[in-house]
Every structure is written in structure tokens, then in C-alpha cells.
Length: 289
Image (cartoon, rainbow, N blue to C red; front, top):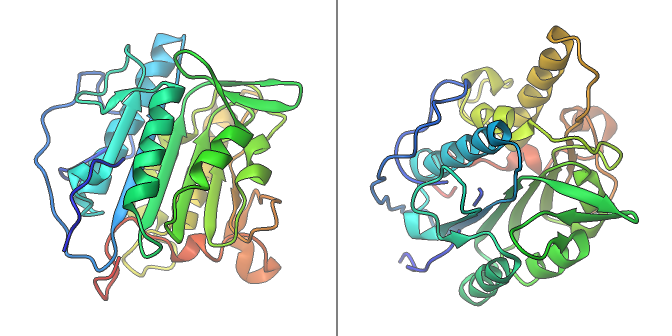
């Protein structure tokens, strides 16, 4: 029996998944129908959009949030009230759960910590700006920022045994060590030494529903497959525009706190990637998610 709670993730819900990996228009999101799921375990998402001073960057990140919410509700069959979206007041995202302040972030995590069980799946997705001060990542939110250690401490309260944590911002790799945990997948949109605005989510979110990402042709797209396609398209973007590459996506899922730039090579190097290869946002063939 599905528990009806208000839950969350930046970073998105109901409706059909966007088929094209391209960027959709800047218009505001239309009303979404509520969906239900018969999955044996429950999936919850908390999506957080941070501050973006550049209007174009703000719109691109908002579109990624909208796509992700739709994808979770469509292919993922996640009930609308299992997804919470916190965004800045200037966001294009319609019907947000509230402002993306540190206070609201703590309230949402507290709610999830009380509602979820170890059999559940939890997704946390942050996309926005951040800065590095004294070797510490500070996620930029309206009002006080949140550091990587504060974020890790909050997420540690959620008892779900399967977790996907995505931090897409400048210097995101600094958060990998703090967030690393066995049975948790951590994705960072950039390395710790890359401090420019990222475009990772513009490519990663569409890749989650792009058939081109299905390298093993099993009819499903795993997190590691989507990451691989996103990384390839990011490389192509910087190469074709003759720009210095300023973002390198990372993945950590073996608990050693050392993220990998090419986790799809896990069958050979036995490092990060195995758990991410078994994590899908859509239903599994046995119907258990």
C-alpha cells in the first residue's frame, strides 16, 4: 500500500518522459496529473535548484528540473506526492514545493527521515551554483549556503537503503568524500578543481531517457549508461565549440570516497560503476523497480 506523504527531486513529476535530448522551450511547465505505482518498494525524490545569477543558466537548469520531474512520474512511476522540488523564487518551475532555502531543505530531509524505511529508494538532486571557500564546497541557496559536510549530515538521516545523490555545481567533486557510503551512488557534475558553472544536467537528465544510452541493449537505461552518454556529449560540446573543458562528471558508488571519471569501465578495473549499472529510474522487468 502506497504511503501518501509529501516528499521530493531538483530535482521533477508525472507525465510522459521527454523523448528528445534537446533543450525544451523556456515557457513555464504545464499542470501535471498525479500518477501511482504498484512497485513493492517506494521511490522518493528531493530536487533542489540553487541560485543562478545568469538568466540563461537559470533557465537551462530549470528545464533540467522540469524534465527530471516528468521523467520520474512517467517512466519512473513515482507518485507526485513522493517528489518534492525546492527552487529559487525566480525559477521557471511551476508548482514548486517551496523556496530552496537551507531551512526548507532541513525540513524536507526531516520529513523524509521520519517517513522512509530501509526498503525505500531515495534520490537527491541538486543543480545550481556553488563556490569553494578554504577547501569547502558551499552550495548556493537563497539565504545561508550549505556546505558539503552539512549536506552529508542531513542526507545521512534518511534511512532508505538505496540512494542516488547528484550534486551538479562548480567544484562538486569536493562533496564526493563526505557523501560516499556503501550502497549509495554519488554523482558530481564537476571535479573539485573545476570552479566554472556546469552544464552537466542539460545532458544527463535527457540521457536517462535516450535510447542511445542503452549500450547493452537490454531495453533499460542505467545510471552509469546515462552518465556515459552525458559525458560523451559534454566532451563533444566543448570540442566543437573549441572551448577549454571546465567540467568533468564523476561517480562514486563503491564507498571508498574516490570517484571515477569513467565508471562504465568497472567490469575491467573493478572500481566505481557496478551499483550504478543496476540502478534504473524506470520499472525493472520483474516489476520491483
